[in-house]
Picture 1 (cartoon, helix red, strand yellow):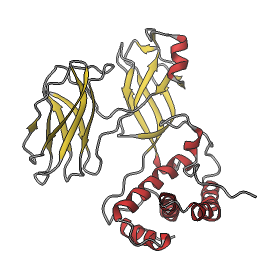
Picture 2 (cartoon, rainbow, N blue to C red):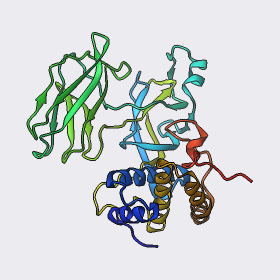
Picture 3 (cartoon, helix red, strand yellow):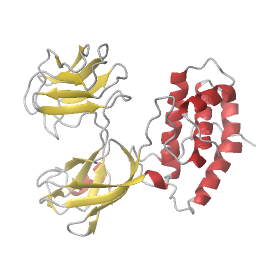
Amino acid sequence: MPFLRLTDLRSEMAVRLRQPGTSSAQRDLWLNMAQDDIATYLDPAHLVVPYTFTTVASTRKYFLDQIEFLKIFSMRDATNVIDLEEKTMQEVEAFDPDYSDQGTSRYYVPQGYEYVRAQPSAAGTVSIVSSSASDTTQRVRINGLVSSAPTSENIGVLNGTTTVTGTTSWDAGTVNTLTIFSAVKDATTVGRITVTRGSDTLAIIPPSLFAEERQPIFLWPEPSAANTMRGHALRRPRKMVNAEDFPDYPVAYHELVLIGAVIKGHLSMFNFKAADELYQKHFLPFVSRLTKQQSDTRGKYSPVIRGSDPRLSNPLWNVPTTLG
């Protein structure tokens, strides 16, 4: 199998799509989407990582210690030696409608997405700053509540490592009552963008991302003590940005990433027949070989943290299939 860098993947995609006019940005999008899809489809062992966090009494909401996980495989209360079971919020509310029960947690609920890591402890303006002096043209849009009403402010432009402060006074919030919904860049940056309200760090946005994605985890019953939670989860593959970057997979997977991205390109250009042929004749056999190499240990519908929709276990669920 060839070792494929992003520059190689871009060139090969243009050849296979027979569309040399597609932009690098389009091809990068399809390639990174294919990486994510393959992760949720195959559960590659090299992307499975451990996580640990400590509960706080009377606090039910936590974030895992990676930027983003695609799936949670296990969660154990190491202090009390209890394996927690995944539930939906509806199931938990059937047990405890007002979510007031406290004690030793038995269940966890992955719920929604958030785009900040904390809420402002006091009302006031929001500031932004970059870790690089080169960032002088980008803006950051804040979405949240002012006097309990949805409001938006576009702060900027960035002034490198010099702090820039907005003019809107945002409501104070808590971990369970969100008043800042998101902080989103209008373009990629050279440095990390830190968003603050006073001494509270609301978000740290990586250079190649537009927002910081956070996955909240709710525990039930609400913990009544400090307990150590440990487990394993599937992390999101690292995004390819620079020409020298390569898929976040062993070399044996690189061709599969390319095939998946070409299928997405065909779908985007409404070439459904070409997408279906590639899926049936190349993608599925490739997946079968890799699955055998992993000893068929992957469960078809392992927990998907992004939602319970079983279509998410198949990255190409919307490819039209050939009848007859």
